[in-house]
Length: 316
Image 1 (cartoon, one colour):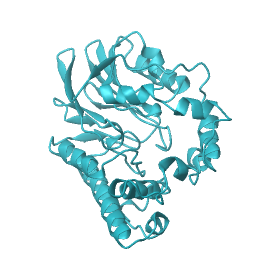
Image 2 (cartoon, helix red, strand yellow):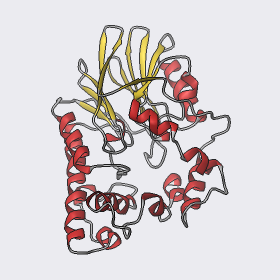
Image 3 (cartoon, helix red, strand yellow):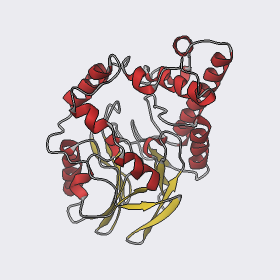
């Protein structure tokens, strides 16, 4: 695999394959992909807000001035992967039906923009950290307009891009885009690199299975939703992290240990350098809720966001 520096901007991975990286990969700093053949291209995920979407658009034009975006793919319904759709509203915007439903029910637009919206203690500070770090002026959330279920193939010139829904996992629906002729996977948030993920939905075993499914395709490069480009060894490390989260949560829950105590005793030497370690408690709680969905003592994700310092993460 070609070594791709983790620098903000558009980078070439293969002959017609690109990644737009947005360090540091923390909250709302996501990656996008571009698959090109001749003057046609498919864009995978559109960043968070107009300002960053415009930077992405300008970077594409500077690198491939004659390339026309023929379609956009939203890998899932998290806002940092589709709130830039507005700039490409005149082309098909493709997502799964389940992801589109999440977009329609989007609660973050209100929470970020309505300073009076009721939220648990501490969550307003978390939302303010995100709102202050990004320019959302002029943003009109633009939904996907071409939906599918399961799998779909796109043609980019003479090339094929396979869209495969491996969710529910990170969210209710998580698509990865496989480019067979280049052995590249644009994984969306099915993969995080050098940063802790967030289990919004689960089940975690479905996410682990999705990692195995991607590994079975023998990829030369995997573009994560957040963080630097990795190879199969990096994907194996990420799968091991999810397995460790699952196993630790199950063991602690069986002993009657609280989520907070479980987070305090979580150790994973391979991921000790990863950023956003405060997400560990969110992930452990997700497994707790999956195993005991009626246990009211397990805090919700929204409650736990009140213990996350988004301002510090975004400034880091």
